[in-house]
Every structure is written in structure tokens, then in C-alpha cells.
Length: 409
Figure (cartoon, rainbow, N blue to C red):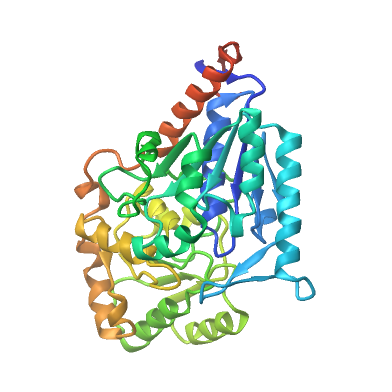
């Protein structure tokens, strides 16, 4: 028996704009699952633009509303996925669905992921509507957003920080306070500092599956992952070249390409890997956690969710961050290397097989993240649970109760 808290009829709406990769929906899903596991009676609805939202499994009391997808190009511009639909028309449809969903769902809490006003401002009217109705508005930010210069250029023309100060009740930064402050050097209103909580990173767990994915190697291997894969060609090409030119690498490599990798790039990598006995390729694995737990180490790009996985499973890692269209991955990788949490492969030295070979040979000798981490890196989900409980109980104190339930319930 254990004590379970019940937040009767509490509703949380989450917004995830999802224009590039897997990160935003993955983060929202992790938070949603942790909340419904912690609180009986709580429901979470995620509004998402991810084109592959339907391929994810969701717990009971977590559901999603799909809005039309918009693609963020490598140059930072946006385009509609529908060839015959103008981008402005797509944004109008998205905005209408979001506003109608919020009005019908009547959330106690709205959590907006990363984009304060939504993609191209599509959340602003919904935010104002919910503010008038008394919904608690939360802006959730990853540990690093971008360089201050780029954020300032992006946000200042539309007074984004002023609107954040006027509309949002809380800012949750999904990282430790001593790692990075995403709003540093932006001349943010003083009130935002008072509303900001650093939660810690979001812990990942191996999902329970009746049929977990088969392990590709009987011996330990290096897992190479590029998240969604849309911009993962450089790293995969580098790995293939390294294994082609070095026959004395200590471990084989498993390459996971991601669902958004271009078909011609995917086929090129597969063809080259077929000639290598110590390289295997998977198109995509929805539950990467199973593969990561068995890996001796990880080679990856510098995305937020990849770092959460590396820390959660305490894996030695080499990180090769992208530098466009944002500086986010580069900043995160440099800071993590500075703290001894990962090793970084400098983007300026990309493509040298000898450099990669040396790094792979040294990977087993690197310290584990747990050897160098200061404090609990992964407090995020527990912290968010406590924050949600505080908000809901302040809004409606009788809604919180304690029930005794078996672990199987």
C-alpha cells in the first residue's frame, strides 16, 4: 500500500508547437506522464504540431490534439507541410483550433513549451482569454534557449518579454540553477526573476513493455543518436567514415537515424553501413531508452532531451552540437563539458576520422556524469509535481485528498 494524492477534476493544458525534431513533444509527454502517475483525478491535454504525435503511446488521462504541422527549415524559416496550403492559412487554422480547445477544455493550468507567444504569436489571444478566466499560466523553458544576441533580435521587435511579464504567472526552467539561465543578458523585467523556478532536468525511465526492442549486439556497443534526424547527416557520415578507416575500435556502433532524416540520406547511410560488420542501423526507435541502457556510451548531438537521457541512464557521452539555426546545442555542450558531464566534439573539427577514432577509444575511460555532477541533476519531474500541487490546491483546496491504493492500481 502507498499514499496517492488526488487532484479531483484538475485539468492541465500543454502547448507544444513542434516544428523541428522530437524535443518539444517528448518533453511535454514526460511531464504529463509524471503528473498523471503522481495524481489521481488529474487530466492532461497536449496541443501539438508534431507530425508523428500519433506514433507515441500515452498514459491514461493524457491525450493530445493535433494541429496542422509547420516545418522549420535549416535556415530558420517556416513553411507549411501541405503543398497547397499557404503558411498564413495554416497558422490561422492552428490558432483557431488552439483557442477553441482551450475554451472547451477550461484548464486550471496552461503550460506553454518554449515559445512564449506560440509559433508566430499563435498563442497570444488564447493566453489573454485564459488569463481573464483565471487559468494559471506557466511558461516552461529548457535550460538553454539560444544565445542572448539571437534571442534579443527575435523577441525585442514583438516585446515578447514585456508580454511574458504581463501574462505569465510562473516560469519553470527545466534545468539546474547553476547550469545556465536562459534569460541572462536579455534585460528581462525584474518581476520575471521572482516568478522563475529552476526545476532540474527531467528524468527518463525505461518504459515497461511486453516486447522490448531486440538488442542488436550481444556485446556492449556505442549508441549514435541524432534525435529527429533532420540535421543528423553530418554526425552519421562522420561515424561511418571513422569505422571505414579504423578496424581497431573497441566497440561496434548502433546508428539510430530518426524519423525526420531525408530518405536519400537514410539510404546512403544504410548502404555504407552494410559493408561494415561492426555498424548496424535502425531507422527509428520510439523507446530509445531500452537501447541506451545497454550501450557502453553515447555519441549524440546536443539536444535537450538527449542530455536528459544521458544523465538519467548515467552514460559516458560524446556530443557534437549543431550551430544553426540556433546556438542552443553549442552553448549546452560547452557548459556540460566545462562541468565534466560530457565530452564535446568541436563543430569546427567536424569530419576528421582520426579525431573521432581517438575520442571513441577514450570514451570508456571518461567519468560517468554521476562522478562529476553536483547535487541532483534530475529533480525536474518531482519539482514540477510539487509546483502543480501547490497551484491546484491554492485554486481549490477541497480538490486535494489522500487515498490509499495498491501499487497495482
